[in-house]
Length: 120
Image (cartoon, helix red, strand yellow):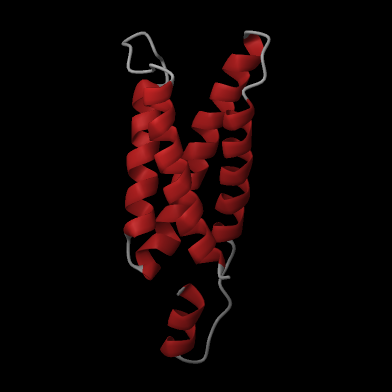
């Protein structure tokens, strides 16, 4: 399985699960400091995952880096309260790893068709 496909699937999963979390935990309150960052995270990941391969290869590392930042801050806000925010920690770890994997340099290919095949 190609890294870009894994990135797209992970972005869609993380976007949907974060959006569902907002409903399941009544997080639509105005005092929720993560509401706007979470909504941006959901929209950015969904958009990046749906872009054509070349654009997705550029957008996914950025959106995963943003997601890792939001989710690690969320994890530490749970830690301050004395609890473990396991879903946030897992999401932050997956986002950080995928941001690093997707940001790695792509080897040069002799033809445009081989480069396109690598991104697909």
